[in-house]
Image (cartoon, rainbow, N blue to C red; front, side, top):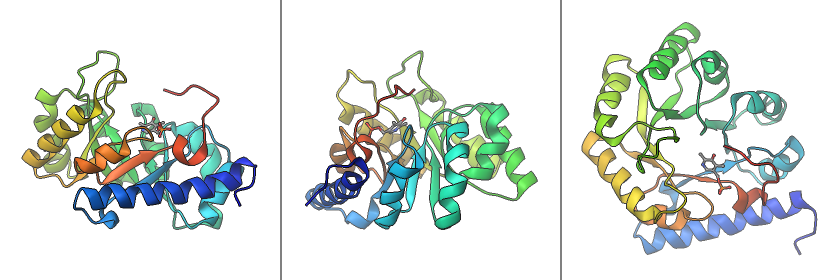
Length: 231
Ligand SMILES: *Cc1c(COP(=O)(O)O)cnc(C)c1O
């Protein structure tokens, strides 16, 4: 029986998401083990996150550096093997905190932030894996490098700055068919020889898997609806 409290439901929802990943991967002739589930815990407090840790899940995403700094040191004390992903925009004045806290950064979208991470990385000796975020919908207000500039940024990140560039990330526009964006991101990554694709959220992770997603970012399907609006 699934009990009524939110934490109990989160563990059950996690299982349901894993089942859906397995079905989607199998339908796409992929191994479900190739798809890493990032549980997006933004806006949720530690007591909502703990049941998901207790269920054995270790890969989490947050979109704000300061919020993550408040929540994760405590949780990590109990679960040192947690892998924390920054999936939201990064300002250069937060780079030091971000590199100290996050294992993977999905939101590199301009040379300035790439250079700041590289500098902080050599200072601290921590080498986060990084994704370049692409603004596939060319939305003026949205983060992400334009597709025409992605190759130059990838070259800077990988070859000049020697960061551990693993793949590309996108957030499709709300009002467009996401699969067009997933297919486009997959093509860009292939052309650059990058293996990982960070794409797909609660509403569309199954189609993202169909188009090759390796890192899906799923929040509300695990933790329930968020009350606070987030960027
Ligand atoms: C909040 C967020 C998600 C998760 O969204 P859900 O719809 O709750 O699954 C994924 N990616 C990014 C960048 C986010 O900010």
